[in-house]
Image (tube, rainbow, N blue to C red):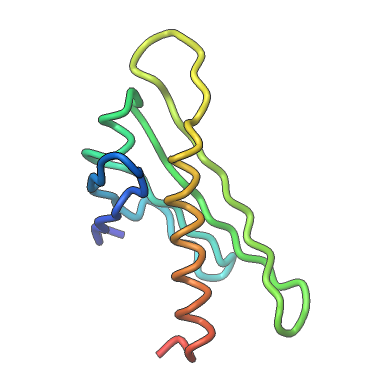
Amino acid sequence: LMKFFFWLLLDVSVAAYQKEEIVELEESLHRIALQVLEGGHLNKGFSFYKTTFQLNAIAKQETLVDVTVSSETKTDQESTVPSKTIEATLEFLKCLETYIMNGAS
């Protein structure tokens, strides 16, 4: 669970990296959670940011991916997740799909 990931955030104006750690890996449940440790979302007003992916087979060649984002802001103000943060999750899913479709080798 101590493996780190670096993601390129898809911000049109400025690209930035964030360091993530796998904080949950439940192979039997097909669930993985990544928490941002530095950079990225933490530089955009969040004090905590975790993305959980739950994969569920719905047919022989189809998988439903539930994505849950848990976050806290640095201030007491209510904040909505900027649309740009969703793009990083979608890009991850595209890469995962490509990996699986190429035989997951």
